[in-house]
Length: 334
Ligand code: UDP
Ligand code: MG
Image 1 (cartoon, protein in one colour):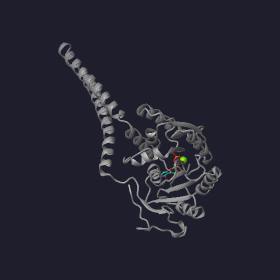
Image 2 (cartoon, rainbow, N blue to C red):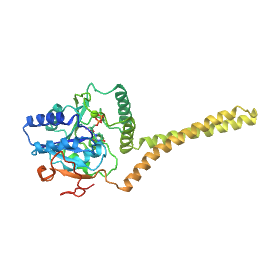
Image 3 (cartoon, protein in one colour):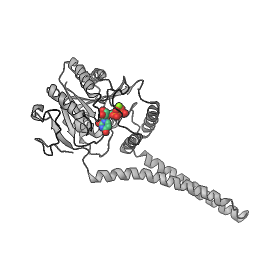
Image 4 (cartoon, protein in one colour):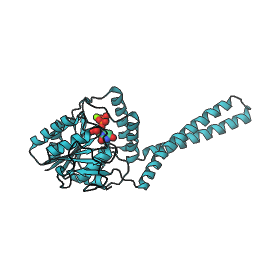
């Protein structure tokens, strides 16, 4: 059983050496065939140089994929999925928040016959605000998508080849890999994994990017928000009409009341609020349809270092800055 470890890397120079050392130690200890596929997601620091140095040091197992710019964590993993050769694919973060020492636990579950093994972070080492936000997001997402996933944000996961192939066949513009993997799984399971605080560098996720990611998740895997707002909007509108009739009848019997103007203002604002929120949700879907219609690639590879049988030594020496517009194997694919 060959194992492919796929790792998205974005500005992780402070963690990469220790990360590679620890992953390779764990994987070497397993004695089976494996590859470590590191996807450089347009890092602006020395990450790529460090990765290329590791590819030169361990050309038997380390592969580096250099994306042409920053596409985001999930597209970077997808780029890696396209090139994996293993029977099992493990994903984890490069910042050492997912301890590589947990990989054998995932793999033993795969050997038991599970095709997707998800990690659930016990004693999560992130800030309180981040954990609180994640908990709300998890609850809402589970309720909306009806997906049995305990920890959507945990990237320490293992997928069988079949599931990865199916993920590779999707054409969506925006995606969320754990949910996608779960939706293709026949026999998924979850295990508890450790979580470490970030030691070097900083999280690439601002609050804005987290919110964007969650909209990807909600709109990508469910139409419930749209339906919910449709139903809610209908009820509020019907209530507004009923109240209008009541005010009209009251005017005929009791007479006009000046204060009523303010009641109508309140109704107007309520309706306006609902309409605007509804429009926002519709906009989310329309935006995605637009993205889909444009059919833009989700990532583009600038150069494949040491991939596709090309020895890493034939590429420029690690350390030299190289941006070949058309390298020996210009691999740009969807
Ligand atoms: N990452 C990436 N591209 C991005 C942002 C992040 O490849 O645009 C990688 C990053 O290098 C790390 C993983 O995705 O390996 C998780 O990122 P981060 O630690 O910033 O997220 P958090 O742990 O805060 O959720
Ligand atoms: Mg992290």
